[in-house]
Image (cartoon, rainbow, N blue to C red):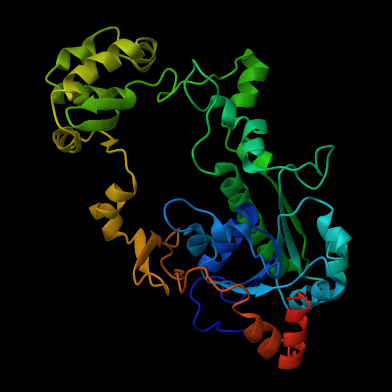
Length: 400
């Protein structure tokens, strides 16, 4: 397989054909590529994945992250000749990944039943808003809708206003992560049995999967969780507090940890106060306790409170943004953020491959390539044996 020696990670013998766009499908592909898989990303000619122009700030840099380590080709999946190209790629692939609306792949002759005829062991990863079945299957489904249906959106924000969002496309990345998890399990099954299968990952069910005990709490106790802002109901102290020069997070809700916090604050009597002596009592008197702690933290700087909390063994920390991440020794020691040279920037920094593995660690070999169809000649020409003249024709006819 092309460049398998150069690639590092546990999946260097795996080839995945990525047909999706935007976030949910491509993030799953990114996870696979980070772990060493040969990910061939197929984009529509002349326009490419919309992620190429997404991002904030002066330049669209999101593409540099989500398309890293991928080889990029173009193919018009709405044309029979483009579909035939993709089938040739899938013939030698282990997985195919898509996140189109259900039914789209079937209309293109690229549904699972079509693909197993040319590759009986193929694993098909399908990411969508509502899944491949059910009355909502063919609805348009973005992350925000899945987050709402899965229950997460209702719980986000302050209780006195409309639900807010997390500020990230968490529904997409959750669905992508569950899809990747399912695909890796399917690889194990295929290795044992020789059988491929379909991974059907919906955004709303991916969100539902992390909703803790919200369903059984309602069924058994008729209890519906509500928005609680920066706190968790009945868990105290665990909040963001004001310092003289910023804000700081302290989570000292366990009895023994709370006692250490009280001693550090110079108020050891609080740990014996019946309002705060036990976990349930502290939860019932959360606002009173938060006001006491906040009055203390306001007399000190963030650095001073941070130092005192670490010395006392109280879980606490700063509220991080990109500047704090780049300046933090823990980030540096674990290489959580790494330099990734690009044509435009010699040391573009981005999050590293994760999780860390002691034997087969993956790596970032290159960022998302800015040239649309950058690997057309390499893959279609060198690997599939299509002549230069044919490639020129197909490009002129917008097949690639």
